[in-house]
Image (cartoon, rainbow, N blue to C red):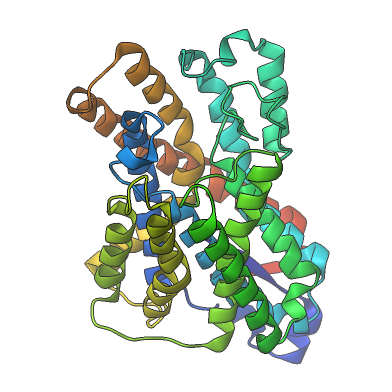
Length: 398
């Protein structure tokens, strides 16, 4: 997710240099922002088509759309290293880091939980077997726990899908995002590149083992707070997040013309290809997804990071959807619950449901934009002023 941070211009730092209050902030990796937006849009499309697969991954239309989460984790590690690695040497504390991450992520987590609770009345369906029995107070309690990022066990959740955040399913990935941030700040940031490379290699082996030798042949999962779900969640986050940190530190970049178009096309194709291998050779699909996460996604990031602060019509579009990506990702799923219930209850065929699905897509983008401009950006400015800045602030880059 986009990392908008702030650095403090203290009186002592101003005494040390007369230019600190007007120093240029770090530049944005605009292309990476745009790719985050592309991935978010693909997630929404994937979720809208998912209902027509009937729970069978062999029948998914946008088959590998869930890999966008693994791409997010990779981008997040890259951005965290870019935004914060140099601040530890300057004296930033762990608590300061945690406050900055809370300011960046928590407002929209709260909004996603609130939207999920507000729309639950439209979601009653046979596809959510436990929801009808949930009381108002249970829903309010789950909403409050979701606002605090406290996950639920499968026995305690209220929808019947074993989600640890049953009002807003995608919040599960933010749980692991926070966990990776804590691991980074608590000690893994201190690893040398060699040691970090060893950790990344071990995490890659764990990912390959799960995908190629596991029972599913895909990375689907991570949202259940049980042994299997936790294993999948940890395996999914550890390699891409710390591979992103390592990529940033190594400084390898590839410059190509039209980098946003090239990377965007690679990402869309990777997420949209059909499943490989069928039911008899699950390992083939697992190998494909391992290659995406371990080889292709880092390559896309290295190409996307080849240019900073580029401009042009396509890049301005990229910047817009990059800003929109996190609000879209964290608020769209309550609409998908409604759409899923409608399709299942009415037995709506894909051709008939496509028009409504397109409307849901547009509504999700509109809600995300309103949340971004009317709530998320103002909330982050206010929280940044209260929690991070007894003095003047200047923006720092992703």
